[in-house]
Image (tube, rainbow, N blue to C red; front, side, top):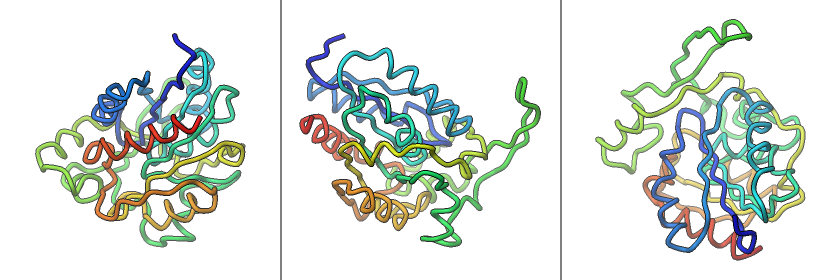
Length: 238
């Protein structure tokens, strides 16, 4: 693998999968960048960050690490890897040490948490019973993908992967954004992750913020060119 240009590593949200990056990947390929869209395990922040860290260790040269929504918490923890050179947050939150999603929403957008999510009890090997969350299909478009065609939104709803409930209360032990240049895209019409939380955490981190006032949570699908351009800007910066 060439080490002369940064590699872009994309980390998807909970209740999602790597397919949501397909348009962004195509746009970044047109810009000559090498891209990996990681299958985020969605089992908990420590678990997911450790998994991502093991993948980063196999990449030569600098990495631009990109996280969508909960993926932002994952890259905040895993971004301490020595080859990560820049962070990009897409419709994401940038937690501080000891700060969870639930805590941020309670302070900055009370009443806008995960009340609409569907909870399911599952049995996991070696860990007993756990609770997983998904977005109910009947409200997926209104919560996640209001700026997408209804048929495409329903396809994304069918493709979503469950996320462990604990990710809402998990908090990072390190904050890579304190040491690295960061970029953030705030989605102003987001009904899944409150724009107030996105905006506050991005500005607190000193990230270079771009805001799309009418973009939904599914901005990587609805606005792949805008997302790719922000990532490319970060890549050029290193």
